[in-house]
Image (cartoon, rainbow, N blue to C red; front, side, top):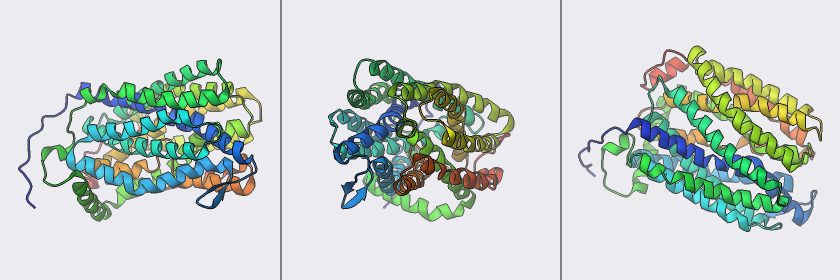
Length: 446
């Protein structure tokens, strides 16, 4: 089938478009902050415990699951679906160039699922798990496309800065909504607070993403330059098949991706289970947990910008490697925390915040440099499988460790292997060669 002639597409108005991209981070970060990190892990666990007790078992497709493992297993099952779904969404975005509309459509599906969580009553664990899975799928697919826009809206030299600012703005957005939830916690009971917070996260997500449709161009990326016959879905399958065939030609890109998938599993799992760990193991009150995670959001703003500036001087790879050492220290300190001592939890929250945003932002900008032109969203689909506040192996290891030991501290220690192995794998990746092999300009500092 022949293709129509390429259509010239003017470049985006960079400042306005980049501000739109920042705003979507502000809007969508309500999901990983409010839904994943703070409320759903604890609320879904409590709802399941209301039905079968702490030591009982809920049954999913005949499989007995401990209430404390239900949230982690829901993430694992959803991520398995995303192994197929996200690369396909990325392929459609690359092939059609309609990145803005695909990003917003997927995001709004997730937001509507969050709004519906207000209906998850104290015993409706099945509804809660299903709605969370839908929201997670929608968020992850939208973020795949959002991450690919970093390449369209920045140059190789200023990408670390743009990525760091994007993460910093996202943390402030999530932090402001969490502050509102904290104020609400002083007036309503624990169950009502969770349902309202989950619902308002969806409202926030939709509300602040509405201007994004005006600020971002309709078409972005190489796919925007050609109008092709056939459905977007069939084009996406064709694009994905081509990418999978050619990925073997970029072994260094795959090496970086492998390192990231390992160490980011550890990072995201620590963040995902932090609230559950503080509630069930450290026996901290909702007020303490909310204050601690609220502290993370605002300190992470400065951490992301600060590590971004350090990366400009010493290189992003060195900064990420240093952050992984700090993450190992975080796990060790978390294991030793005393139950019922809020100041220790707050101190650990500050340490996490200082490296969280920077390790995420700089990993994203590093990966963006080793992607071949024209396949940005598809490659970020594989990247996102281990991002957006969740992962595959980390929650599975944590869930299995808890189910077999009944101890959250032992489950947490099981995550150390992800940081050690990830550090070694990243250290071995020759970034300059990887960037040059992908056909992209090599920045002065790496």
